[in-house]
Length: 158
Image (cartoon, rainbow, N blue to C red; front, side, top):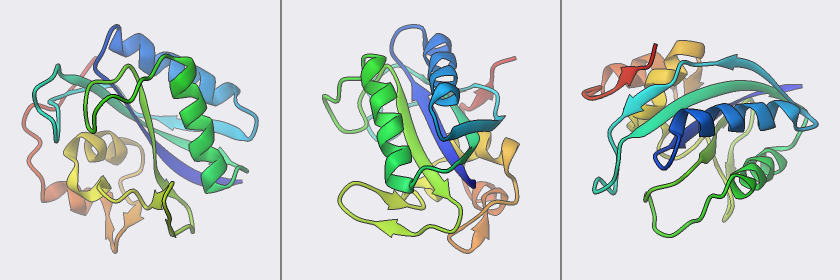
């Protein structure tokens, strides 16, 4: 089994229910075992800022899927939960990103690992630091990367 980290986000409908259902479905997917889950965080939109706030979380999973198969599992769950891709960085019912996959560096038309924006996005790093503060991406820990970013507007739920 290989440790991987996933980012989850939602800003349409019942955001908390979407994240919870995504976690449940990931945990029921053959070859994926959820081993860590951050709290949910209310976060401002990033990139395309003319939209509702997001709820974001991260997961640590142990998997025997390949990086591409893990991506496909996430995309299948997104589709099953009604994700429609209308505009880049736009509103979404659910988003499941593969952030990091232990020992893998991938760069092709379908997948880039580690995720190309992970160290630039506080909304990803805040929940990721909660479950894996010493995870190294791009030569620095996620805690070190987060220390360089503005966390304004990111608040945990409960």
